Image (cartoon, rainbow, N blue to C red; front, side, top):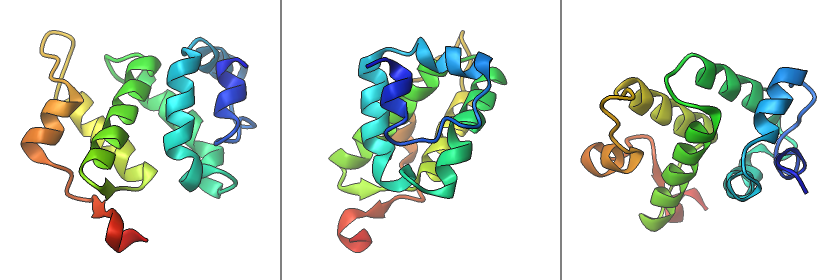
Length: 131
């Protein structure tokens, strides 16, 4: 399976143009698998799934970070949330990563975990209250 096949388990690829498809195709299968696993429940078969990847592609295009770096940061946020017994919506995770990316640049790269540990995640909910 290539990255697009993996991503299709969580997201609709219908709105991706050829350029966007190729950008997502070059993401490692391992990273795509982690990303799909964390987003599956919220995105599979929902309206959000049709615009999530094109929107993410556009955010990456307008930043100093590659699409793979964006996805890596998103995965790190989901992993951190899991360790803290927290959850957040995909949109909230994207917004958090966007703020952290805008707060950093290539010369001053603070990892997403630095932001999480120093600022927390205000919109996160405890898993027990989310169930």
